[in-house]
View 1 (cartoon, rainbow, N blue to C red):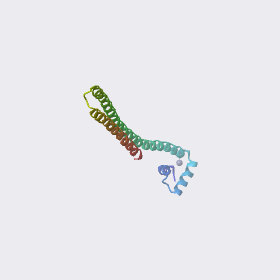
View 2 (view 1 turned 180 degrees about the vertical axis):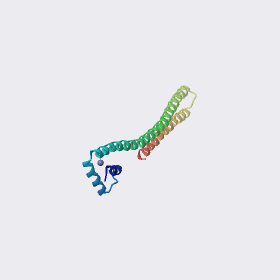
View 3 (view 1 turned 90 degrees about the vertical axis):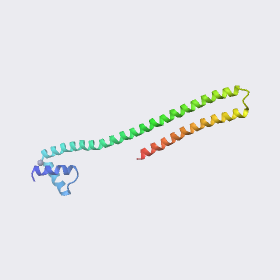
Length: 148
Ligand SMILES: [Zn+2]
């Protein structure tokens, strides 16, 4: 076989697609032909680069999608958390104002005072519960994403 014939085997050799017989022939030729050996080295480098490119590219995209979805979810969760915290603070503030007025007002009965306190406490608990639910679902989503 001439060098030209062996060049056809080169890509097959790099891709590990040659039969044992072809592989042996090719390696024997390489040991006696620096030209083909040098060319094989060039092909090997080229192949390493193209393999890297085809491997890295989709991986990058997956990571980008992953971080985009994580970012979206964090954004939404943060929105909920800020909303919940603001609602709790406003409720507590409003509640204290209301309590202050009611406590000062001697004409308001004790039962009504206790009832209003319970109402405000209940609202605050509801908001905390919503917040905890959001955090819980967010964590579950995050694990789902990691598994995928
Ligand atoms: Zn050769």
